[in-house]
Image (tube, rainbow, N blue to C red; front, top):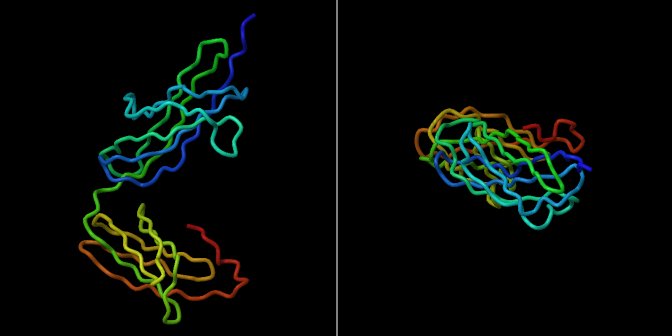
Length: 200
């Protein structure tokens, strides 16, 4: 009697923006539709038809999951900039527990090598705002206890977005061509303001 062929689903997470051509990492997992152990199986990262990195699924499932076997894969980022489409691939298993292969596409944000440092200070009513989230395109940072965050970034035109629960901050267009410092004024929102949520 032929054993049934099970499906395999894939997941990719912890995909951080990365500098073109530099080493980055991501986590990849595979799960059997029948809950079979997929530890020890090879999984690949592909760019077009080329295998650019690979890893072996670990011995234990991801915490909180029943059968998502995973690994962290290091790879060299593509040299082309922007949202680059890659994929992870799991080859079919032909054994006493056969599984279909699977491919999952994902995108990685590839940025130019940072050339400048932007210092952002977030204040409200004259005082610093700690743990405000800073976003400039693919670049991210969080302010410290002095309300300051430093972001290393490539030259270009960006929209500076600042968010912290309970505050309203207007987005600010900014052009980066050298090291720069900018101060951002945040406005405290009423506690029950329905707009005081992160929508970025």
